[in-house]
Image 1 (tube, rainbow, N blue to C red):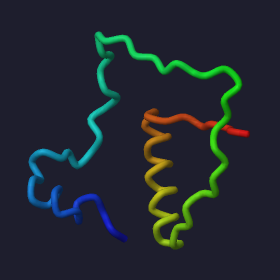
Image 2 (image 1 turned 135 degrees about the vertical axis):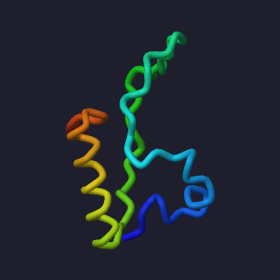
Image 3 (image 1 turned 60 degrees about the horizontal axis):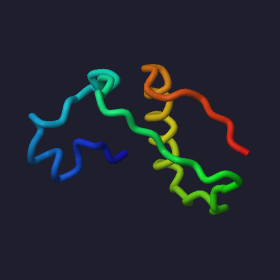
Image 4 (image 1 turned 90 degrees about the vertical axis):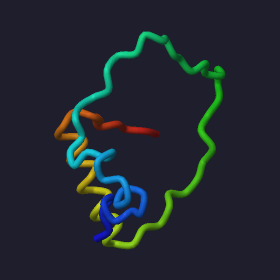
Amino acid sequence: VPSIHDQPIVFKFPDVFPDELPGIPPVREVDFNIELIPGAEPIPKAPYRMAPIELKELKDQLQELLERGFIRPSVSP
């Protein structure tokens, strides 16, 4: 299974990339918001196809992020 550490840029500069995620980024002083257009809907698009090994890696990474509190479950229409 390919790892982030297999990426050339990560391999070349290992001291820049942490082995573990250190935590949620700090609150920024700049307020940011995305203006939504009333009535706008997402463009329907089929999900990308993934090889079974890639799908397993994606699920493992999502589970880790969920356990660490970086992401939360979402239900979309």
